[in-house]
Image 1 (cartoon, rainbow over the protein chains, first blue to last red):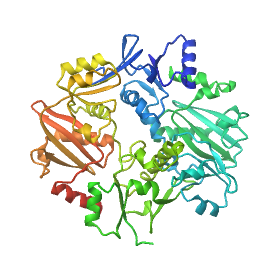
Image 2: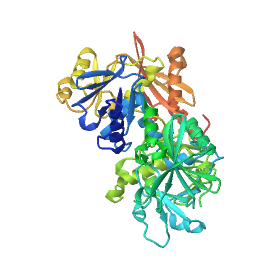
Image 3: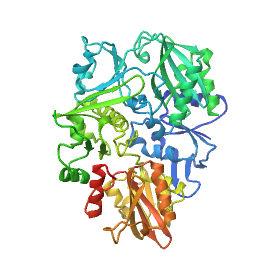
Length: 282
Length: 295
């Protein structure tokens, strides 16, 4: 059985459900909205330990089952029980709460012991709540973005321009990163032992907020595959995406995301990313 | 600037270890930072270079220190409470909390001096919900009480009737001080409410044992004799399993509660914040050694 944990209207959930139904596979939706009503859950010390009751039928969860988890890590009070269920059950899970939270601190990802060793470059990074004292002392252009998993818009830091909500954040540290004037921006998906690269072209620093952003199939190369392998080995996860910038022959690592959305790239015909994702699941 | 600080402890002023720190050490040696200090009082000047090496420099009042140059650091802040962010504007409160949490996770993981390393989601070290603790313990063959977490009301009633049951908590499966008392509720009061999630645990009668583990060394005390920790209080096969459980959680500093009865030893909880109250002399002695960095 395939179980989809998340919100029914979430784009990846909708997409995966549709793709599976095209293959005559009916996944079971588990969301907070229908919990206790259409779907009931039990965890117990007796084996089999995890049970999902769907339309009155008991499904005893085993290693053969698959859970696709799209619950946000920032709704703990709402989804705690669902996350406990996912964390502790014997099914194949993409990805559990613990896995998602494992990569939730962006500065921690940059530390060499964590995701990639010192052979790979990352943009020079400053974290400060005293930006006026230190940012100006570096002869560099900077971007700033969030450190946690809550979404923020990656923004160029201009000393002479209004800076979004930055001034409101008072004592809160802000992550500044050296602006890399890259010729290639890549989103690389890792499914199991395979990697698939998408090239992103955008006029905006943060491509997600630019309507004219376009995506292209990218062949990838040996370095990208090596980076993916190292991330798999250091994090122990095999379903993720990561962002790279390329300047000259050098790659700069930006971050790993354990909750990828391959469906965002469904229009990149040549890459067939979404088909590869579904094949990986099955 | 103040003389060189070699120890940093993050803790509330009421914390037992923070009290020992202020009682036994000279102020020139250490810095005690409360959660309020961390949120509102520190200046942060951190850098991660292109090779991934971190340098975390904090300034608090007249003291500046680098986390990577400390001899010893201990964190007793389990999580950042919502109230700490009351001074932020409404729309930024959750964001600031998430940012500070991600940031502290980074700092408390990037210095070798930190005794109890943070991991994402757990600032003091890995401490999942009690249900996950029970299930983890059972994977290494430690006896656990019968448990049942469910959204099915009828299942909860049936489990409760079959077992000498108690409810750890309704809806919230995290151990709090209150939950740790494992209060038994009156059946009717709880089970009248059919909404939500029930976390039920079989009540195990017997004598409690506490195993405090510091850097892999266990200190075992019996409820009847808390003043004297001895390894002989527990058979070594049980103790070895407990040490394996601790390794699984990767904790340098932890407390595990077991209950012994005629059927054997049963796991109750593992905590990454031992010694919340220090009433016993040997605990004080160990704390001082720990804070000296000589444990």
